[in-house]
Length: 445
Image (cartoon, rainbow, N blue to C red):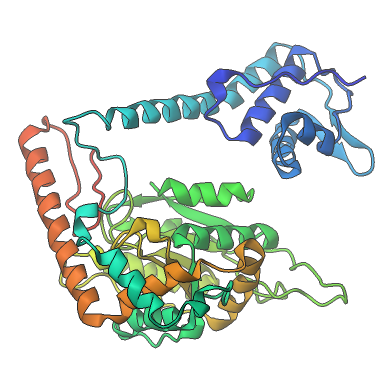
């Protein structure tokens, strides 16, 4: 008879489900409730008992396997390993849980801080969303009416999973204004840039493509990759960007999954037959970095582009703050160098216009767009057409779009200057902070 699996503690309710389940199993093993040699319940049974997916159980078991607490055997099941009880095992388990407990405490503390932000008289610096005051009253209503003037029929179906052709053309125009030869076929519309990250994370997981992220890093990026079981490596970032000597080294990748007829499946990152990306993906936020607020320096940008060309890597560049840049020129897009074959650019209207519109996109090579479109179609069939129609009207009105962009830039310039002045006045000696050229973030030490 299998020993009962203890339920998670309330103190761990901020951890991901797989981590809570792994902790429960870990404690049961170390305490002896699950003895060496004991066979764990099947994945499907554990999933049903805990009310989670089988993928969540497998993710928990993978952690325990890496720790040597359990071992899996094809056709037989998963068993508790020998030597899993006693003081040494307990110490090892506690050491494993310590950072997770710290993460739970941090998450709980952050929630308490965010609750304080709702008190009268408190200025909140906790959310990276646009100020509603930047949207003129009636703008959304007007744009919706204009979108519907072309007929409701175009919004009654799922639409093209790549996005409305007219919206993709309008987005391509944004890049052509930067002097880049981008076509609508290189654009994939997504439900915010977060879905674009999820598409890339899913493909990286399936193709076992290594992923590296600069750190500090926007937490939503890590959440997207972790959701698909991808564990990025980390490259420390300073105010100028990632250092050249720390960029990922080429690795040997496994072949891509073969199809039913033995043909290799084409992926977003290569075919796996010598054409895959041997250095993997590198995520970075080169413009108004979240959370540091600084731009990548020209020297670091050249180094990253040279790495992508020379090592066969792919740059995943998050450019969602480009429209909020206050300087005379923002850093050039990686679409120029190393080019769309070696770069994926993320964009969005969530920061510069309306977060609730949930219109984002990625721009890359046509072939990669086709591959990721197939993945996206399996996720959602397509983004809401009416929301896309509103975004299309907004972007196609060149004068209105430019006027809005200048208005929000001036709005955030005033807020940035007020924040910097307050820091200079009130911060104690020894405190340091960045002076961003726009965007929402600055980094205080």
